[in-house]
Image (tube, rainbow, N blue to C red; front, top):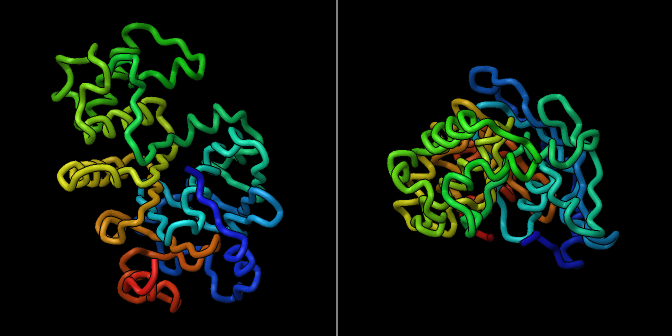
Length: 284
């Protein structure tokens, strides 16, 4: 579901002092990771009166995990979905500003090409129910009209499932439907499906909120391994999760990016009072 803001809250956005906002981390990035994603003055609105994201700018770094935090309705998921042009699927949503993935402005690319570069994993595990586990992994190729040789297909299936730690669990059940799997396995299958297209960045919208603690821990361990090869941006309400796995964190409030910094620094010494209040549980 797309985040929305009531008009009363949207009106507050315009009165927020811009001097409180920062757009890039203030400390050097670990290992000098290159920038993989640039958000340049991105705004998203449903109507002129209903602004969900207001002038967000940030640089996201490769081979790292960036968490987007904030209370419900602050624009987290709306911003995430703009990165792979999911809003193109809905009428009336206006996205302005520039979103640049690996040096290419997504406005200059076909949406399907953008979605190959920016894979998406949603809150609820959503394997395609009518096709097999194996076919789920390579479904993106069919949706994009890309043909695979049998040997290529088999290699992609095995590699993708190995990358999410699922191969040994399902290698003898590849022709069964995805519904055969547990919730945590289904979510790892969805991650494998996203990774199969070899994206530049993996977008995750509350990927563990529907899972039990054991499955959540398994996904978190997986993401820490995956970040060695790919950039990950994760929307999460779980501050503990952000603290455990993210390298950098963004805090959004009423559609604005309030603070963006190295996670450890933000959690131990936030720059802005509003961030401190959120992290201490005073609202949210």
